[in-house]
Length: 375
Image (cartoon, rainbow, N blue to C red; front, side):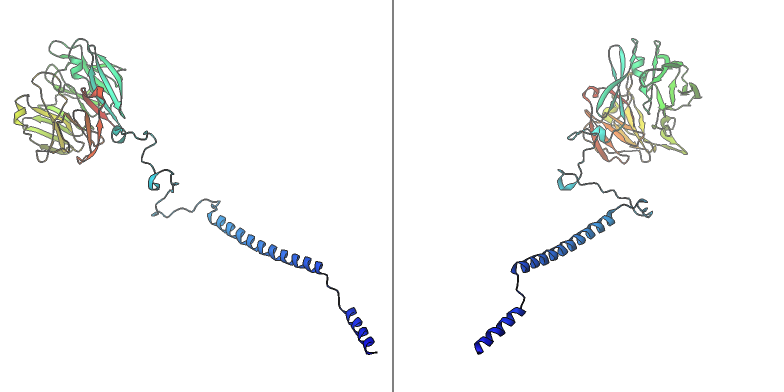
């Protein structure tokens, strides 16, 4: 009786309990884990998007353009660091200069050097720029010494002047032309062609020459009109490249004059050389009138364009140049360089006589006369 009652009670209890489906429980657990992963992934994605959006917001250019810098703020351009350059520094080779080039002319002498050469028939004007030598003009010699002895280039490198068709005394027609020899025209007659410096430029538009009566004439070569007549008792004239300062000699001695100033100076040439020449004269004047380059006068009537020393006008002292070896010529340029020509090179100095560079002259121009340098 009791056993029967127990079985009935157990049956009732079993009927009240829900059966557990393990498969369903597994699926529910799997869905729960999937939802958790999706939520975590979405949260990470939102964080990433937020970070990217923030960065984009920081670097996005303003549609109205960048705000102007204050007046005292320097403008800085940041260039990408080139690859293959040591220490991340940009290469020092300029785009115009091939890598490995040692062309000094391209560094300091950006202008043109003009030289005078000769053949049996012509006076040949060479122009050298960036190390490249080219012939710009040929002027027929005409079987006389006057053309080669007088031909000259203006300081700006735009004009040629010379004397041709001279008589036995060395007086002929003064000719002017463009630097390539074109547009040739006659400016005057009975003009002297002999001596160390037959024609002298005062700037690039005016020319001083000597006539048969001994008078010195200053002429504007553009208008072909005389600017002044007799220049007085001045001799051995030489002007700075811009025509502002004159170096010359008169009864009082050598002097340099310029705007509102006139200063005498003296130069004692080396005694061992002085006996070989007929004195000396200024050949080039600095743009501020403080220095002159001096050269020898020959004992014959041929041209002498060379110079060998620099004299400081205020002290009459010879300036020691930072070069070794013989000096063939010294030229003060309109861009305030000092060109010291030696056997095969030109040493380039600044206005304070500090060395800037050395330019090796082209082999074909080393023995020629250096006429001018035009920036």
